[in-house]
Amino acid sequence: MANLSSISNPTLLAPNAKQVASLNNYISTINVRDVDETVFARYGDQGITGLLEMMGAKKECTSGTFEHYEEALLHDEIKFDSNTALASAATATLSIGSTVAKDSPIRSGSILRNASGTTLYVSAVADGTGGDAGDLRVTVHNYATGNVGNMNTDALRTFAIVGNEFSENTGQPDPLSPQVTQYTNSTMIIKESFQVSGSEASNIAYVKVDSPELGSGYMWYLKGEADTYARFLDYAEMQMVLGKSYAGTQPSGGSLKGTEGLLDFIDDKGIKADLSATIDSTQLDEIIKQLDKFRGSKENALMCGINLSLDIDDLIGSKMGTAASFGTFNNDKDMAVNMGYASFNRGGYTFHKKTYDLFNHPSLGTALNMAGDGIIIPMDSQRDAKGGDMIPSLRVRYKAVPGYSREMEHWLTGSAVLANKTNDVDNLQCNYRTERGFEGFGANRFVHIVD
Image (tube, rainbow, N blue to C red; front, side, top):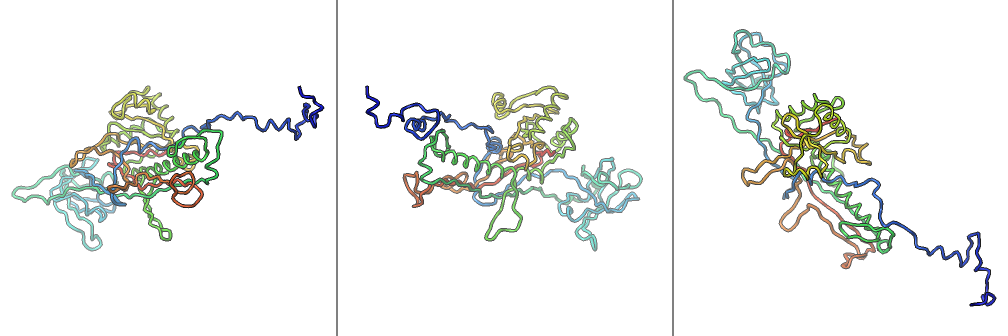
């Protein structure tokens, strides 16, 4: 055993109640810290992607603008002008304004009927003259005895064409051409990037992190890359839902196009249901009646903000009982349960309800203010008469040509980390890019519920 007197400074080995700079307490600086290697997800899964990926489809396009055509209604209403003079005789000449006259299907011989049951016969249709240039001047006769009657409300001025009739020894009516509705939208370029220096990339962290693009390990920059990639996917999703066509002033050298997203698609062309208060059975029934009127799908996804989701749960519980049916996505009951859908049926229409995170995101919900909103999306598919392919209700279009796709591009640049250096800059940069746009079919079958 060594003699203490042989040690040059034995007092340094003695215990000390105070932490002073000594060889004894320096040992505490090399103790291993007990740090859990998992980064706790305090906000859960923050991703908001999935609506377009889950319910829609994807198809390439070779131009920045894409289009398709949809059938128009075989039968249509006509509406006489609000400034039409009140008809006080059995025969009257009424006007259809120039904004709709060019597309009006009314012809000589048509039989018209309005909500009150008034039935009129059209004996002549002519272009307006003078101050009425561009209008259609329609001569009508009442089928019943008495005057044509007053038309002082929209309901009384709106008529359906319910048939036609012709006198003996007359010719054929003017022909009608089939009508189609043109749908046009554009792709937009979405980009993101993440950069880390070579020095930082070589640092080791206590926690283990994963990157879908770069793998997993104890390098913290992998977490930054993973977050950037997730944010990029969210941007792409949000633009397909919230996007707008760009009609503003272009920045210097700009060529912004935007894309009409799902919400604008419904608001501009589909059914918009404004709630006066918490949704009730009357309002729900009115939505279903509108779907039925415009040939909605019998199977629908109902994507809800949290407030609307809870209100519907209360409504179903108090008025309709518990969820009545499950099954969607190839009619797989288990898949519907796994996706978190609660299904109910009303009036022959089935709705699979799911809370949509985008409408109630921790850092987006206040700005978007959509916790009380919802979207009804048809879940059936139509078949392409020419190619036989199934056409979904919505899909993502992305730019692509043979050998090159801009659906989802990812590439690495820099001289750090990479085995094959691309330049002499001491960093690693992860780059992301997509060029895509939203495409919807049959807006009349979609509903935007607005709180």
